[in-house]
Length: 240
Length: 305
Figure: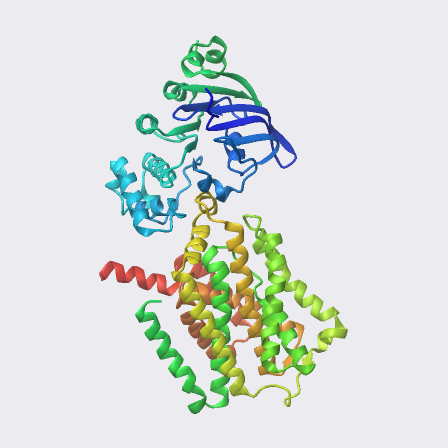
């Protein structure tokens, strides 16, 4: 592989105020793959994503996107760099409709015709949302809200889509739907980095996985290999 | 602005321009105070109604403006220079304040503003050399502009405030502010520079109370710390906006007319009770009419319309 990875974290240290959370974390995401970041509570999984988009302070190390350094960028520049982010808890504009939420997703797109086109494109991709385009986001079910959050993050055609706990608080039926949707996105050529508590499910759809423990890299391998790995199974997958 | 908004505005402006011709001094004074409340409420509406960052001490800019205007007028400045300077000084104070408090989310801004009004009052009391302390400043009638001039200045401010609000509500800037109110984190992720937007809104929102304070000082010819750093004034502008409808164009205007009228009628009879009534009104509004009268009107309209 000669081209640089789409996302490359090198020796990343990050902290919340005085408390250091990440220690020399390494991570790579290649174009077109799904990478799952798993590990127990408090391992710093979400912190990795948050430090990429500037919500957490990076102490040392480098973050590169397609070879270009973006360490410590301002959060509102993330869409300009081509990073889409679906935060934990699906932060939506609850008092706006589904369509309006999608429009807000293309906030930086100045041309209203282009913005409408993008909305239609995303609605085509999520028929469930299309049926409820005029409904207030706050009135959607949890699964639909997650769909909308993903749809909104796709509005700026991101090069990299980052998802923080996409299955959190969803019924099993919706978890299936969301994960199926993520696979569809990958097959369309999207690149995904996902933090997931539900490690087994995440590794089933991922190409590669990283296991984090107490803010440090513990394992990194192809997802199928991690699923087979005795130690990973015992410690993180609740397996036997 | 929509045509209906322009129509309402033109009608109100027409009446206000002719008012000095047929109102007596008492009535004109009352109207001046209504216009002052419209100005203050629109400025509060800009920062708190639009972004959701609640300012409990916007009156501090009014107080700073009142002292700046009075002192400059005594120093020999033209009255309009004094008004402009008051506005600019208030904004110049808001900028560093916003830099300190608006970078943080949550209640910090509200708490800082709550304290700031008191700091202003105490400073005005203690800085005797400049402000005359508790004795206040009496402006000679020879220096102050006449009532009609003050009236028209205040009218100009209220019109400016409302036009500015109308423009902001339709602009991309207004959309960004409302996105911050609905969910700041989401707004940030979608590419909105939330800190810059909050700072601009806050600094701009200090201009008008500054100018209004100066005109108020000319109008009453006497100011002291407790009359211009008045805690009740902070409460009044909040109640006016909540009553009319926050984040709307005409809410602050409607709220100002209603509240000032009710106050004028009850003030003389129950001077002590009147503050308690304001507090009660605020609680009732938050609980039962969170979108104010205009919001309720719209809801009823969409149900039966």
